[in-house]
Amino acid sequence: MKTLYGSTPEEIETIVLAQGLPKYRAAQLLEWVYQKNILAWDEMRNIPQDAREKLAQAIPLTALAPVEEKKAVTGGSEKFLFRTADGHFLESVLISQEGEAAAPGNRQTVCVSTQLGCKVHCAFCASGQGKFLRNLTAGEIVEQVSRISRMTKKKITNVVFMGMGEPLDNFEATLKAIRILIASWGFALGARRITVSTSGITPKILEFVKSTEGRVRLSVSLHSSMDAVRSSLVPMNRRYPLKELVSALRRIHRDLKREITFEYTLIAGVNDSEEEVEGVAILAKPLRAKINVIPYNPIAEFPHQAPTPEAAEKFCSQLEKHGLRVTLRKTAGRDIDAACGQLRLDRMSHR
Ligand code: SF4
Image 1: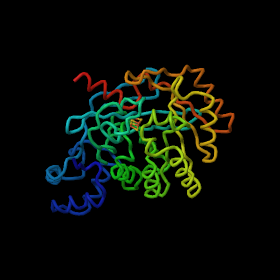
Image 2: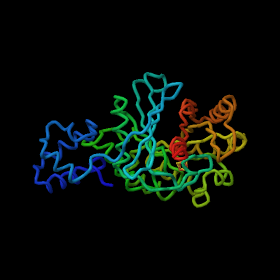
Image 3: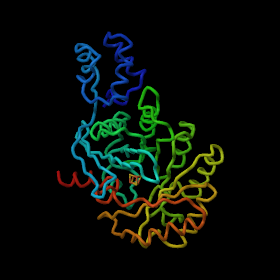
């Protein structure tokens, strides 16, 4: 469904002119939507009521309705469930870092979903277990950011495409959403404040980096340095094996000198061996890649254990001994079922 959220200046101008309204109304609409994050037509105070009524007839303003908000018990993150106009559920997370040493200042990061379900079917991911329903529109992606900003009264500083779905499998909408997030007429976020996380669709990564001129941060799900293990966790690896993926990333690193992050979901007894530490170091060092280690958050469909905090620390420190930059994600998200897709699945099973 096309909505005002997700529309570009050109598209908004076309709608405005088609309603016989002056062109300058388009600039006003852009400001109300992307900078003031309004969620109702009658909030647009400098647009007369008859003009608002005409516009409302021409295009819906929004596509989502809030359903539920869950706060992490340990603080730091809040999870939001939204309902789409066609009755499906999607989720987003707000991660607040206020004045922490690791992130001086006030960083408010929204983690957005890009699809309803996911076709990649990673073994450890709740989203990957559910049925794929459809891609989200660019409007549904950016509306998550606006709604969370309004609901929490926080200025969003960063957006990560790490929620439900594989962003590069919804390529055009992801690119359009990024354009809106970074444009001066849009949310005006710096491109380096946007991170797109991918399971490793190699040709799409190359196309994405070309389309965004490497300006947006890229995060690649590694999860293992061995093809057999990675294929069992991320079936996509059978199609785009590690050798192909890493050689594409080397080209990107060589040509653009851009930093790449590897996501590594650490699962006890599956990918936490010393052999993996060596393998990850061999892959990551030439790329000067940062490793983001995420302790596995157990789901019923994948009966493996989370690593103990000590085992996770040890895995990270062994990687650091190879000179790699490593971050260990806090487990605060576990309090709110922050494994992607989990809240939605929970809700779906109770319908
Ligand atoms: S981890 Fe990401 S890519 Fe893999 S199934 Fe889940 S949502 Fe899809």
